[in-house]
Length: 475
Picture 1 (cartoon, one colour):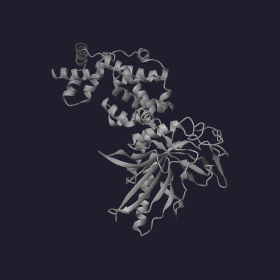
Picture 2 (cartoon, helix red, strand yellow):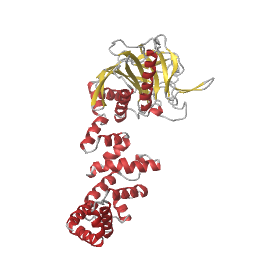
Picture 3 (cartoon, one colour):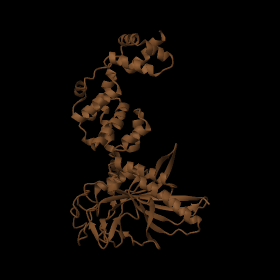
Picture 4 (tube, rainbow, N blue to C red):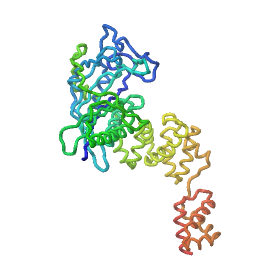
């Protein structure tokens, strides 16, 4: 019997506001533990929440990017549970009326696009960080109260690849909208998977298993693919799937049981009494949408129009800082395809070698754009351009200065000058002419090298090759 996997995802995104969701504490990462807290974060009696306006703007932008209906009235609820990760004993969230509902996202699967429905996006506060030891747990309340949006998909994905592409697309939206840095390794974007199996053709869902806190795109696909195989084998052998929560053990390449679920938890939701409903004006909502930075998909299409391949566009857009650097070269009138080639190969090679980020390099993007213009104007080879580029990166100097220091001069493609070099090379190497006519293709490469020597490296190789073949045919 074959089974169909039914998969839904819950994605928690930490927003990069300056302060927390309901307090004035700084919202930062990697500060000394328990230093970024206020009395409200620690649930001191008498403290009151105050909503972060910028977090609302960011949530609106994400909801709009996901084609959602945006609620113009904000309602908050208390989600009651007694764990040490929230000292209040409850979380402020949006259970009854999420800020966004009924949206969708399109992913590319092969040559086709698939639309995945999104049920809701709501705002809430994050919990504190727990570090567990054998007989005790340490709590860092710096993270308690950090603004979150939770994005809940409909159960419309059916394999690990679809889930991976969906998370990639969500991450691109939150990163390029300026909502989050999307760093899964730091917990800025966390994914919970709900997965069940059912025989093909069956409408009813199977027993749901949850996989918690997946922290990389690769782990999402690997965990889901493993879980599909695990459940399939269990069902085929007559076992019943238990409703349980699991985690992914990367070292084992397997999901591991955390706890068995028997009943749904009753969080006893009720309206948050200290936050009255807030009416958002149409102008506020529209301004949040209009001021949203250009998103990934828009940039992707624009890069294709510049002449980049899909792969080139994906590589550059994988790093927002590199995308910004790439676009900063455009005002110079640069050949943007050539800029992309230099970035993807030579600049990335330099960054990997030095361990630097794109923001740390000494060469302004306008100089890289200028380099592509010089290559075109003076008919320099890509190799000569790469030499100039590395000189600029290493010494922090401009393109003209680097070109002069390397003694690189404009290429010669004047037909008369190249003919003179070719004639001299052929006259000196009659055996190479005979070898080439006898079918020995390496002979032409030798002759190109001889012409380049005579021209002191200034002759344009493609013009040399064409002229050599033309003159050999005459002899």
